[in-house]
Length: 636
Image (cartoon, rainbow, N blue to C red; front, side, top):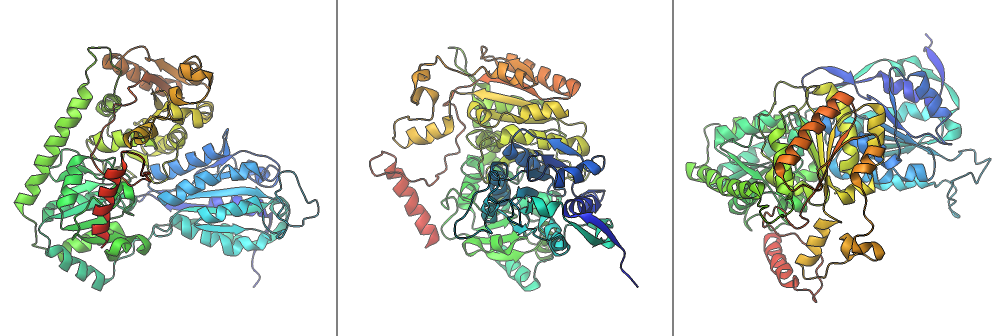
């Protein structure tokens, strides 16, 4: 019996394989694993891969970006918006086009998010070497710029023969859909190999459904975790991104309710718990809330589910009591064992269900749960004051006012984004989640994307394109809003044109604060002089205010509908502008931009400590040393 084969080029085989892969959403519905491709063509991918994509353009849509970094970041945002159940592809030419995607790969790697990167590569034959954009390595002719992806890829391969796809592609699918190993995959594609033909087995292109595995925790590890939790008098449940990607929000809440355990959220786990839930203590960490941080400081057992416990969550490991015990529940054992935690390795939903069963009949005290009400009421009163504002003397809007307005006007189907700088703190610490659709939607019910794993400026400008692309399929009645500053806008605004061109609506709220204000705050709060962060503190004649960007005119030139309220400090005017922007985005099927001016120093503060390198000469060194002592006591 002979195996049926089909003769295809390497590029055609890869693309046909992409089309054949299917995925299962959280509600059980079946969708393409690879719903589309972001592409900028050049020598290195225009003929081989470009021709193959053209042949299947109705089955696998190709979207044109303006920058390779931008389109790859949009691809990552798409994956987050669908809880890692689908994976976008991004392809580039060789050289600078490929290297432009490395930053996006780093973001995906840090945040455990899937994206498939297909950079073009130089010739395997080396016959025309050195080719345009080739970086020659004198001692290693096999090296190209694409080797830069190795440090920021979960899986990297360079396809030098067509038949290598047979062994590589199953690994590609494994990494992209594995909750423990999930992250960016890079397949470097030399341009001569893309066009090389081979007789591929036809079975390679049969439809394949990928279900995200749900590994159960080890029984002994589970029993030991139950024993640790039962000894707790003041337990705290920390809900991270792994709870979101597992679709375990409902199970986390049921666990908290049954055992009277207060619950707080990390940035990646945000909006899984309704704000008015009596056990919700708020957002944890440096950019979170004083309520959650106070609870964390008093807890004797932390049940950390689906979080990598980064420094912004743990306040550089000063946020927990020195004698706290941690139960780390994570699909990745790498994360579960951190900081001497008792590791429970497994899917968040299944682990919570089994912990729940093992703790049957056990609850913490009513006194401990009552602390949640007290702490959250104090924090809510603080946020209410910030949202109210005081513009009697003509003061500018605060970030809290902008965030509160968007929060109040958002629906359960809407989605909000922020990244880097200070806006994630406004959303993480001040956002109040309403109804959460855990069981009625194809996604987890999370309605926020805070990119504070890699803190990549520009992500928040580009991410709404990818998120809007995803959410129009899963939540057609909702709208994406991104909130960011003028610094982020100037870094990566070109994809606003891409979204306008491709017909993907969202609202972007640009808060013009005159520079990199959050780093200015860090700089001056430690006793340093303001330098090179605010425009007024930077070198050049433009520092006097004579050279400024007209963000409204610029965004309009990129195809966006624009509402300009920079000359108004009235929240009523901002509200009306935001509502008009929402209507315009829907009607015109393109981005709508709201431009407002904000007070660069009016931040929401959670009162937590963050370790940064503070020289002895600065006044902030004393607080730095105090923080280090608290940190060392915990580590010891």
